[in-house]
Length: 342
Ligand SMILES: NC(=O)C1=CN([C@@H]2O[C@H](COP(=O)(O)OP(=O)(O)OC[C@H]3O[C@@H](n4cnc5c(N)ncnc54)[C@H](OP(=O)(O)O)[C@@H]3O)[C@@H](O)[C@H]2O)C=CC1
Ligand SMILES: CC(=O)N[C@@H](CCC(=O)OP(=O)(O)O)C(=O)O
Image 1: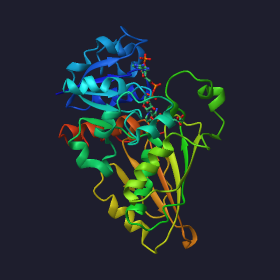
Image 2: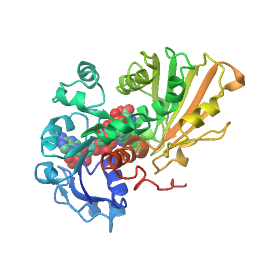
Image 3: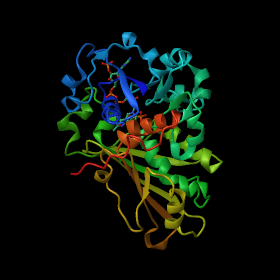
Image 4: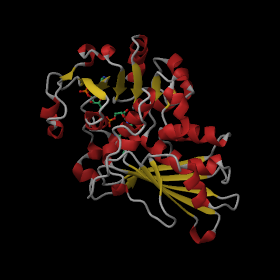
């Protein structure tokens, strides 16, 4: 069994990791941390895990993380970069769900995240954990930068077009909507029920920190810098991201066939039949991205619709997918759950 530690077990992605790993079959939860809830039984805080997780939260300092085989950081940005070096030295693999190792340019990261990087040397070693692009490098890695939620939905939606070189890479548009769990479990005014329910708004239009991450990923596959307008919105959903992506077609091509071929062997990317409109509830709780591609009125604008559950394919599920690759397990192990309805 793979001994697993989770730093940040009281957050939404931490508890989602526990939910998935409790039924994984090859992973044994060994250490779950919380500074605020240290000493409390996990099942007392999260009754849904009663009978599935029989551990207490521990302070990260005395949780025995260095005795694990892999440690997930489900923590705010800026935490994993302080701890990764010593865990790696102890032979522990590290998967960071935050953004500490996602951007290859340290100066760029420091600009967008507003802090100095504590471990720039490891940035060069880290592998960006989008298996649909980086599968072989992930298998051989020690340190995984798990992608952001918006970047997962946007990159999976635009990849086939950029890899095939059939759209203008300088004028991409990503119009994205997220559920409120994307903002985490910490108390903040804008996520209070009366603020977020029955309301809809854009945010981060001048520049959101996922912009450089998406540009980096798309630029790698396009082989040149891409121009992207990224506008996130907060919707009164609990889970889910819906990305509506626009690109200008430069070559006449069968788009449906292009997408179906690109993702034919990808278990976690589902290309819907032509004319479909994916919905967030069709991915709720599941590690899947569902995609539809449209060319309205046969014009030169491609519209791609890409949906994920931000906590699963956008965070914890993708992190478990990466763990499976790191340890040579079947990539789908523990991730074959059917989406929840309603
Ligand atoms: N929510 C989402 O949809 C997604 C989130 N992410 C990223 O995943 C990470 C976790 O997100 P989320 O679960 O939403 O966050 P939450 O705010 O819900 O939880 C954060 C967790 O980190 C712990 N924590 C906070 N500060 C520290 C610290 N200094 N040292 C150790 N532990 C700490 C908290 O527990 P305590 O304070 O008790 O120690 C808590 O358990 C973030 O970086 C986020 O950006 C990525 C993709 C999607
Ligand atoms: C709705 C909402 O607030 N979403 C978050 C993004 C999700 C997230 O946690 O960020 P990472 O993917 O970089 O880790 C935000 O816009 O800041």
